[in-house]
Length: 347
Image (cartoon, rainbow, N blue to C red; front, side, top):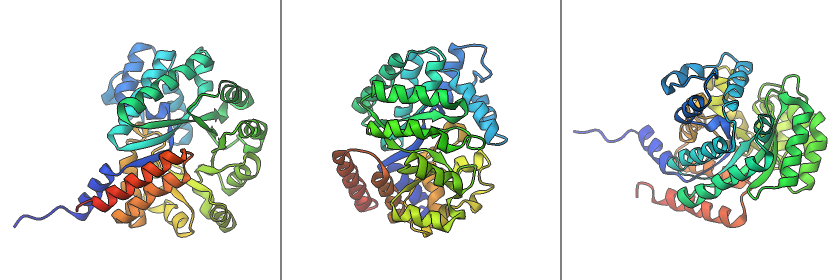
């Protein structure tokens, strides 16, 4: 007698075909080993290996500070507008293979502008790639322009200028990334005020490697509508209650948190406590090739940590739709697609 597929295999199959949205994934951090190696070969002399096989070892991080160091070495490979377009287009291709229908990609224009790419050329490159990707792959890309906090207030000024003055069609939100320790959130308030006045949503990282106070600062000073990571939120019951009351979602990235040592082990990850508190939890991949993961894998990790069946996993996908900044037509279409796929799976 031949055994049938295991429940885990069935769930993995369900996740692979599930239409999904992703809300916390970085532009450069999504570069596959193949693309990183191509960029390294185009720009010799970098610390980044040109051999895709050795990149896995290079992408093994001692701690969050080491991750930032490695991440910035890859950022340094994106040196002209063609690099930007190639990277963006290929990221969308990889997303389409995972049935990601919509993604809000965190983009850090300051890093490219500082390296000599004119802001106008940068924006033109990502917009050209966005339109091509939607036409050819069916994946809708939107942008979160992100301040690299480690670069200080100059980077905030440049990022706000590009976001507000150039205002690319795909831009929906304004963010803040990089290290949290030594980079207090309140100093960025004027730049978030300007972006929000221009109609952009506020989505800063907070509480990834610091305590709940950083999340409170992001909420009170930056007007955060979603929180990137928010790992430490479970340390403060009042904060959890606030997130629930105001419908503020957390962009949770389990494997990333382990890779950067923000959380010691998956078993200790607070995602279960977040969900049990009633917080709107979304699951994301952050910097997928750097962490040896992708969104499908993260859904599998979350399903194990939360004890989810296919219906529960589908609800995770719906959470991302709810928490997204997609337009109403896209929201309705993706919601219908998730419902139809779930109803028909295994039928």
